Length: 216
Ligand SMILES: [Fe+2]
Ligand SMILES: [Fe+2]
Image (cartoon, rainbow, N blue to C red; front, side):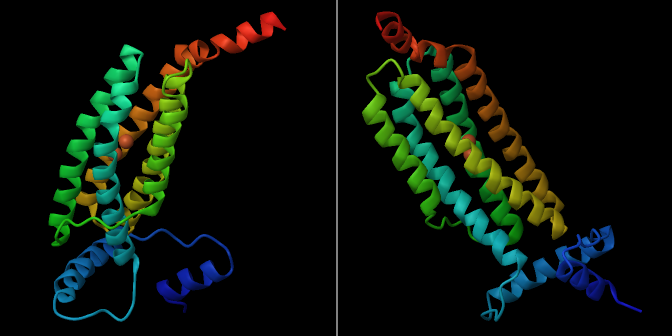
């Protein structure tokens, strides 16, 4: 009879989806992660696994959140629409809380909170800053700010979505719940920006386009 692990392996190799891990398996994994974490401090591990990927992703996001926190004031200063200004200010305060939540998550894992340079977020923020230079004094300034900030939010949503799934798979339920709370804030921030863009800001940014059309 095939064991659970060979079933999962062969399902994967045949391109079928593997059966979901049971509560018991997830609890075993969570104990193994805690054990591995403790053993880590003493010796180098020969092989990388999902818990290593989880830790890497958390370091990535710890770096990203700090970078976002520092980048937001420039956007807030340039934002013209009062609701946009407020939304960015609110999300900066949430970002500060997210940094603390990530520190709690590192603590649960028994690790020191440490960021790891993430070129993806560096690139997204760099692009946002150069867009601000190009569009900052134009009628499309607020639309450009939302354009940049939504790229950040979507990046965060994809990363936290993966981290949440890793924690779930490893039976790290407390960490999964913390990440869930961050994920909900990112989704709400994205939704708020979407509403502002489609509600009025894109329309205001199109002002000259309409004037050009009338003059043609
Ligand atoms: Fe965030
Ligand atoms: Fe965010």
